[in-house]
Length: 332
Ligand code: NAP
Image (cartoon, rainbow, N blue to C red; front, side, top):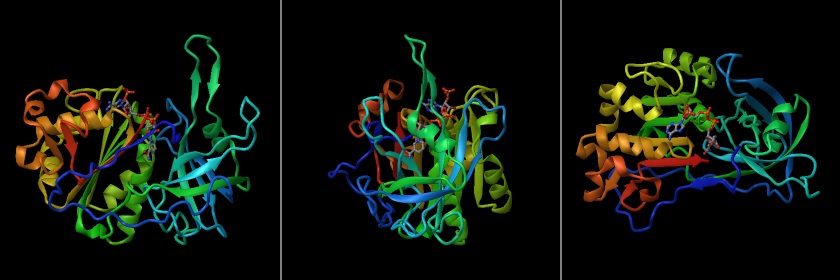
């Protein structure tokens, strides 16, 4: 779940020097429906999107028909929509809006921009001290809906994590953890539909192979489109030369392929998922990339460059500054 309270969207410092080949992001509409005056969508599909039924988390692909609302045909991958759950909170106040990333291309799931989808993980937890079960309000509300049910919607939201105005001018390296893969499904579908000829690589991180999301879709897309490479990084099972893997470990495991793509002047890096993943990716980039490639993505203070292992998230945008060729959306 992406709540505005926990969302950390990185903004570019105004003073940063532009690096060559930086993208011009596409202009996208925003706030066509406000949470105070939401529209109404209709659920058309709600199904599991994990690789196997033996998954450790419950994640669902949920499609919403937005026909007749201002959202019709006006949402883009990388944006999110607002969902307002029915009912009141425990203080008796109406539930607030929650943001969910779209996983559809701009043409939607139906090709006409009427049906957009999102990827929702049920929040199921146990309170550490009281041992009481905690069920996330909005995620479980959405996951429990059936085709035909109506849902209050707002949005779209977000303009900094979208594809460039000219998507053909770049190559793409996507890093995802868990449901952070949602925007990349939509972006990949969009690029394929546009006849994209450049290189796209998705590195998808999951705790177990059974939790990989849209695995069949990505596997088939890689088979059908040789310019799309699909790599997985499983964090709690041995897979790959060094055993368990985080997404950043792919920079070593698949060094030749990934470094060649990153060295290219066209390449952009998109990072989406758990807060903290960006730090691991930046550290690994600093260790694995030659200096002339690294500086296309990160401007690092000389002192910091000599002490990569000590980097912390607080240093990002200070001693370690991503260039405009890096797009990040990470949430805790
Ligand atoms: P998940 O299934 O638990 O998978 C997360 C994976 O990332 C696990 O394999 C985890 O490994 C690994 N991981 C943990 N810390 C890491 C680190 N520092 N660096 C690299 N990998 C790391 O994920 P989830 O529950 O779906 O959570 C996804 C997150 O993405 C949520 O916080 C969600 O809010 C966010 N999200 C953001 C957007 C957006 O920005 N638009 C969209 C959708 C989702 P271990 O657990 O084994 O350590």
